[in-house]
Length: 322
Image 1 (cartoon, rainbow, N blue to C red):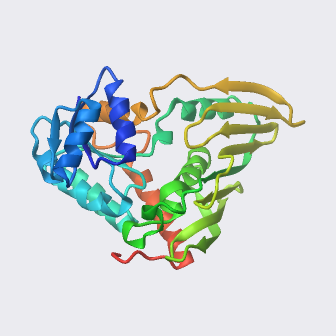
Image 2 (image 1 turned 60 degrees about the vertical axis):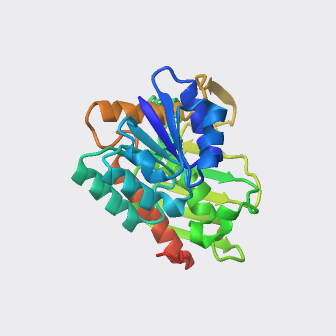
């Protein structure tokens, strides 16, 4: 499948590298608002087509899937443009800046009968099934509590502190702990309590979220841009607990018993970068005539955006363009 990349940033480079190492996909085109930058990117990764505008990419009849890699603030406008040109889209997380934008895009996808997916890679990786299978097999007993965190020292990255670019830790890294919890505990959230510390620009620098579920299970998510965390996702059960080491791209799953003794360590399968799973899931859905991926359906995309909206509302964080 011929894939075009919209936006030549760092994450786009990782995607281009990934596609170049896939036998079932081709990195066919790159678009930037600066033609020279697009040409340099194309030369670096051996990409046949380079465009100096995003609309040119959307109009290319040979492009079969467009990967959007611009800041959160611009996801909505460029997804809309691509869908209106009939182009399937795989958009970087967070899907949009807010739920209202997400709802409009998902409705347009349905109206046009054109695929759109969210590139939150952890939803598509083999680690998800490995964790699910371990829990289903009763290796830690009845699940009762989940914790997850993700933090980096990225406070000096402009797009993370700029409200105009939908900055803040929540949309950039906070989506991963919340997604990890959602993959384990589902969507029956009864109540949420949270707090954050803001940057000078008014977006969240770090945050903590407590979720209580209707069935009595609980979870705590923490994310931040002030410094690194150990990035563990931990699922606590009646017979022990499971640790997913590095929830952003699980390296290993370790299972411990009630005495905190390591019972089993499961290494993850080899990968190109991990991006290949979301690409293949998107390609499969497109070939089957579907407009969403089963791993991250539209209903879940919208639910997670609504959850993050409610957190920002509680913190008094509103982007200038909202």
